[in-house]
Image (cartoon, rainbow over all chains, first blue to last red; front, top):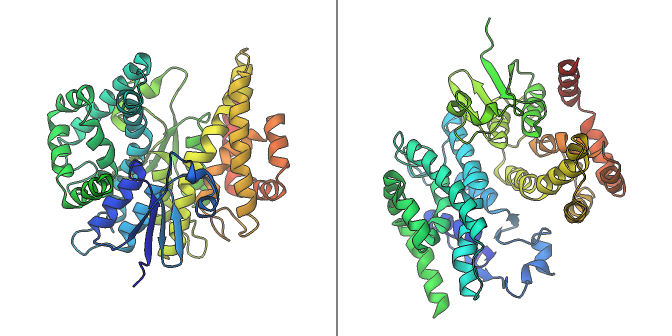
Length: 219
Length: 219
């Protein structure tokens, strides 16, 4: 049977890996359709028919196509919620907190995290030197965000609540990569509750499945 | 009776005005608590107890406090939906499109719109010259976004669907301000469907109430 669900994306794109982790959390079968970002495939037709803004991932589910990773994840977590293991809340007040923290990841965590990864991992791999000024600024911003996370995690087990939600899922790819960078790992480890939470979420079986898929693609 | 709902923010903050428009759309009474951004009130205690990330607006509704404007608007549109005039959908597939376009406004429309407003309106008011390079880049990005909007608006009456939703609400403050900038107005007007949609949404009574509140504050 042909897969009814298709994930168009790249294993080098954190946004793609977020959606992939969410698919595994919901035990959903899907076909992964790799889009070559280095070749600029996402900025050309036919990909632009899937997403006119030229970004991965795009998720196709039967006759529905959706882009914007956080929107895909919200819809998936509502539409395919596993009873008793929902990654969202049905209660409006509790879901309001999830909505708030999805936007915190988007606006506060990801920008400095991406910058650090770009400067300290991506650029050196290409033989380029990191811009020390950008690194210092991003590190200071990330430190402030982790201070808030540390405080929040003294009151709840996970970031938006006492249960694992899409908010935690959204943090997986960037935290995984930050832990590979000595400077960033040190920063994370200076926040004991963040470190413990990070270790716990990175141990989710769904995330191991994502990493396994990445490893297989590299063989 | 003391207001049970409080909106902490600034009349100079597009994010505050978005939430305000949403409050008026839902006929919700609220007390507006001005936060002086020029004095950096949002970066100091006691405001940091309301939002540790130091940004306006914050919405207080009874014993619930929420920050991140888009999260507030999502929660409000679900929690206070007016029957037959909902700004969201209850149907999962239709709501998936709303979720997607909320993120388009966030990631594609607002960044170049804000940059243009900053360079061509805010800076000249302070006697500073716009950075022509930044202007050119932002204008080119905004033009591409409006090209997509123009195409989308040939298929649906509003941006995410055939009905007025939170996606349209989110665009109000920046479109209103862009129309005050000759160069941006020209760009919008070169997209006939965008221009018609823009005129229509800016005529919403809820938006007039926001503008009225701004005018009264300036007297």
